Image (cartoon, rainbow, N blue to C red):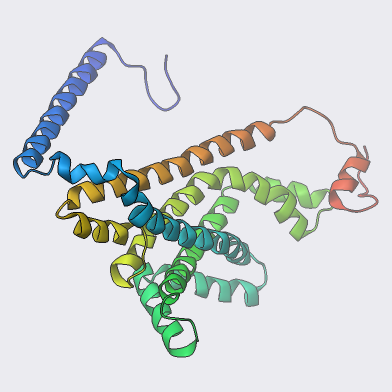
Length: 296
């Protein structure tokens, strides 16, 4: 069957793809076998190094406290950055220069600065000008850096998502009497959310991973820094510790992307038209007015 994106494969192309797949699997198996032999030669696969992860002590003492801090920082950053990014993204589309220009300056400024610098700056800011305790300061700094950077990125995602909609959407909404804020709230944003969802979730995954920067620089006790402490306590099982932590990150991020895929499909199904024809009173109810002047 011929697709819009590509032509159907012929017999030679199918045989060639099967050959490439087989070669790739052989190379992958060789790499895995080489890694296994290298780790075994360095005694990194000895049971003594992996045994602690089959008991509760490693999880209750090291992994769970670090995971809790990681999820707390990521959740706070998500909750603050999402609405903040939406506000700045919509502000960049404003017809008023005094709204659009400051929003553009803020977004472009924080989007251009590495998130690690923002975390360090936040840590110094809280140290010099606030009464935040030294124990809580790394958490505050990490969340501040994540919010400032990711809110600016999310603002661009929101702006781009709205701009991808056909111009006729807003023109038709205004033609039936909707005001600008109603057009944005009732017509553009609901449609843009579905298109923006994969990019938004991708940025949320970045937030989860970037919490590790706080552990590397600001002594924030997150999951990755817990792996360092854990490997030192159990004695030279660094590879085992980081493997377990990596799997936890994979599970968290895979859960986020899976939930986003489910939510995107649900939103698309809900937005399918029922084929109903709206009358003048229905349009007036949507617009929040008593009448629109349009005949049914």
